[in-house]
Length: 80
Length: 221
Image (tube, rainbow over all chains, first blue to last red; front, side, top):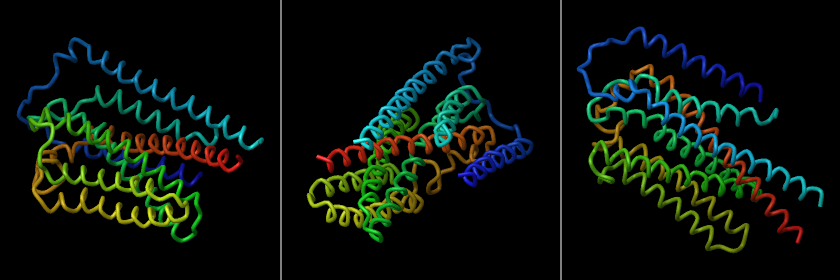
């Protein structure tokens, strides 16, 4: 398990450092394309973020409860 | 808690993707506009599908060499989980296509390849359902599963690259080349892929544990 953990940490670090390097090299010449700047100005994008985050947290809570239920069931079956 | 650390990583990564995926700056691209953010949500579905189906393949091979019925259980549950994320990938891709290409579905090598792959895996479940004897079912479906994964590689990775495709990452399509180099997006995309893969593995382990409990009850009776 610890090698896996170390590998994961290494992976994350590699991504971060790689992207910083690439950022420095990026050029900023681009034709303007219409984006949802208005939505950001009004700040309402946070509402969407909150909604999606809550949906995801809800699903995760459901999975955690399911996980616990199955653990309980596993113990019960083993004690039989 | 000690053995659940990876589930926490999965949740934290996906949550980070949801927040950063909506709020961080993305490159401005014609046609795509803000829908470029779908990259953080639609693409990880396929990455996790391929991963979990590889787990399925791995267990099928293991079954053929060791004849342990547990490998068969793992293989079938992994394939089930793979179909869940595959279906989500198809549906989200269809919505994205509607608002960028103008149609829910286009006769594109990548899209049709994905649909055929799903059908090949559905046939795996039909095959499993049609054989009663446990060892026989496990053996035949394991062989079929190896064929199915090879077909997945052919239909999702090889044929789309040999033809022109609307879908980015295939043929001679330059649509996403710009963000291929975009570092802002990578900082969200890689955690998204890692997070979703771990998340799907979590769902897979729940399915497996439930099936094992079912089996135990069944054998005790």
